[in-house]
Image 1: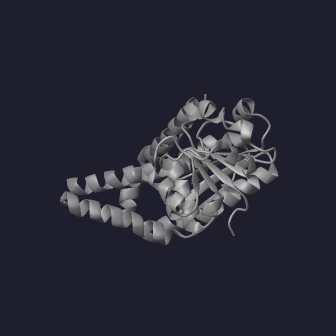
Image 2 (image 1 turned 180 degrees about the vertical axis):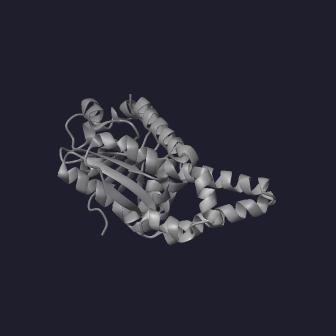
Image 3 (image 1 turned 45 degrees about the vertical axis):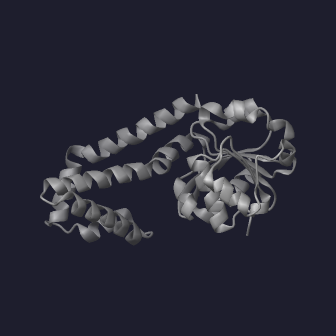
Length: 265
């Protein structure tokens, strides 16, 4: 069922456009209930306008908003939001998809509206994203979930402090997987494959592994392929020697967490 009531999307950059495309694809928000605020013309916003959404209308259109989804760069949110808040009703919910900007910081800058923080991946555009949700207010949490569950596998976080870690794992994780896939292809070239063949095999393997994952335990999935004494097990042992795989990913996630917090500050 669509979310009932007007939803304002503030910002239509890469993530904002992905959210908008996901809403239209899944019917999460009816186009006639969408208000899109964007400083420049965006294809996703124009597609929504063609279906009945309002793009950059007079700010009086915000007075009936049930939710205002903030999808601007973290460094810009104060100046973007300042002219908007006088038009919000008392029952509106602020839904932030900005990395690093905490709920107390938002509350200090915006006032007393309930706040939900959501960190979605751009896969929401295809209805196959991932989203982490946190809110102190139960109604705000429920609305955050309602806006993203139809287009993302959604998890509730018990503590806002975990949002940076969830962002580093899920929000950034796809880039790490792509980097691994590129490295796997490069290793195939070094082993004798031509570049096109190596990339095709690496990409297809990633897709096949994702399709086969399901809900089975990851250790079991690994064990199904890596039999004792086999070549896969030999490769895994090389990858994990001296704990280097674990150490590399610990450093990777920790660096992303630090950067999220820096951007929020």
